[in-house]
Length: 318
Ligand code: FUB
Image 1 (cartoon, helix red, strand yellow):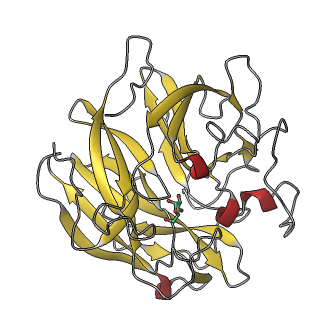
Image 2 (cartoon, helix red, strand yellow):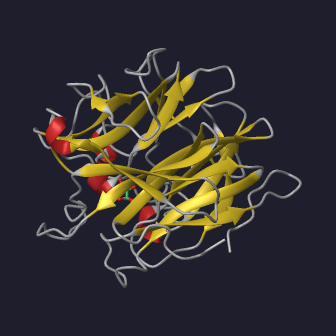
Image 3 (cartoon, protein in one colour):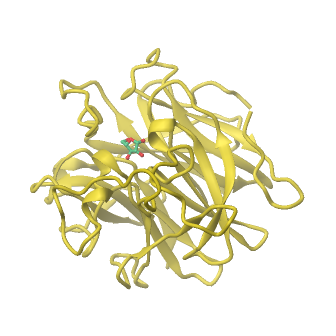
């Protein structure tokens, strides 16, 4: 398997990979050159559309299916079409995406299509009760679907500790519990939250919540949920310390116990991934900035095979 960028004609990031109809589909962000300033708010991540890609085999050609959703077709969006995910249910396909609305607050939208590659027709409004970024949707074996989301700093999760957007919200530091990502069951039509989002507890080896000052382990962004041998694995990025980590649990709602690192820092500030089984092997899709020689907002998607030990722990990717 190539350790090289999978897609070279566009900058791509935040790859959400799924197997639909026997093929591997990748739903990434589409990075682009921009005049926006670079800052901790992530203004430089100034994306306006999504392409969908597919592969027949992990070493095979990557097909670009073209633009599947464009910002100009989503009435509520002002800017920043960030990390998306996709899901299949009831014979339809759903593209979930975060974006900044006209009020500058991030919300999550959903668009519906008849094919995994789209095109997708967006709902006219964001999902009711949604906020922050990086949606990841997991459909369990009983066909119930769950949406995981959240991201701090530019992703605004620190602004949602109360019932409404608090512009003065700050990330807790020191021994205060870290901010927690969120999960909500989706309605059967996949278009709305079926419940008020719940906090996802990530616990340390003593059963205590990870602390805000524990930047090597606390959740920052890039939620992903997969299931292996009956266990639920919640994985995420630690942001400013640049690790991909995971935690394990017995329910899609958690709690999850911190399990370790999946990937060490790569070239570039952000790290974001997905984990998928394809033809009997497990793969980590992620991004770095090799193609742009390290420009943080011009990223490229890569893939690596990953392995579990006999206890179900994920071995660090090479
Ligand atoms: O691609 C824009 C943002 O960068 C994503 O939403 C984050 O996860 C980070 O990768």
